[in-house]
Image 1 (spheres, rainbow, N blue to C red):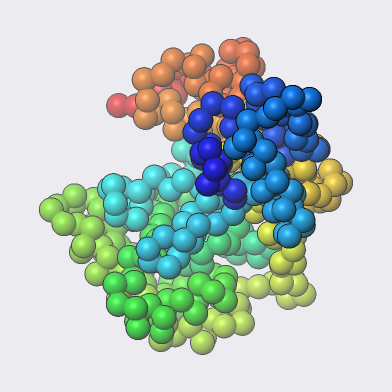
Image 2: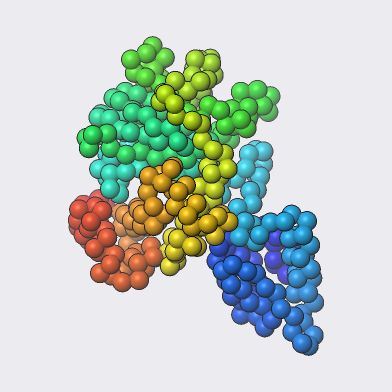
Length: 380
C-alpha cells in the first residue's frame, strides 16, 4: 500500500488517490491523472510529480503487464477471512444479528417486486421452504417447480431467483447461512464442508415433500423458522444446531441427487464462462445501480460485447440488462421505504431515479401502489 492506494481493492483514503470502479473509472482531482470508460491513462506532469504518485504509476504498469488484466476487473478481487473462506463481494446479506452470519425470513411472493425473487448470488448457502402455493425457481440454467412443503438447498456462488407458478400466490421462508457457521473444527470442515463448496456440486438439491427424506427436511425447516419466530434467548444457537442436523441428512443422501434429477431432458449444464460473466455483471449492477448506467457500462464491466451481454442476460435471467437493473433499483427502494425514514425523493435519487415522477411511475407499475402508500402499508 502506497499513499493509501491498495491494488486489487477500492479503499483509497487520501485526497487525490485513484478510485477504481469496474467499467467506470472516476476522474481524479489531481493534476496529471485522468480516465475514461474504456481506457485508463496516467499522464506525467511536465514538471516534478509527487513521489508517491510516480511509484503508483509504475506499480500499475507492472501489475497490468504481469497479470494481463484490465483495471475494470480489479474490483472483483476476492479476499479471504480468518475461516479460510472468501469474503462475500457479491451481495450484502442483511443478517439477523451482527456477527452471526444467519438470515431467516418468511414472506409472500407478492411482497417482492413484480412478484419475483430478484436474481442474486453470494458465498452463503441458501434454503428455500414452501409453506403454501408453488413457485418456479431457477438455479443457473435449471428451472424447477417448488411445491408446498418442498425444500430447496442452493449451493454457494450459484445464480438463483424465483418467480410465480401459473400466477399463483406463494408463501415461503428463506434461510441463508455462511459456511463459517460450520467450521469450528478444521478437520470436520475439510471433510464435510469444503469439498461441496470447492466443487460447486451439487449446484442445488430439491427435497420433495412426497419423499421420506423430503418430509424429514421439511420438519427440520419448520424447526429452524420456529426458532426465529420464537425470538427466545440464544435462538440462533438452537437454529444452527438444527441446521447441523439438516446438513448431516444432506451429506448422507447426497449421492441420490448427484445427477440432478430435476434437470429437464436435453437441458445442458451451464457454460462456466458465461455464468462467471453473468455474475460479474450482476455484481457491477448491485454496486452501481444508483448511477446512470447503460448497457455499454454493464457489458464493459465484464469485458464483453453488448450483444453477448444481452444474450447472457436472456439465457440466465430471461430479462434484458436494463430490466434487471430497474427491478433491482425498485427492490432496493422498497426496502428503504420499509426500513428508513428517508423521503421519497431521497430514496428515488439514491436508487438511480433523477426525477421524482419517473420514480413514482416505475414504482406504481411494479408494486401496484405509490411509494407513500407502500411505506404506510409495510413500515408499521
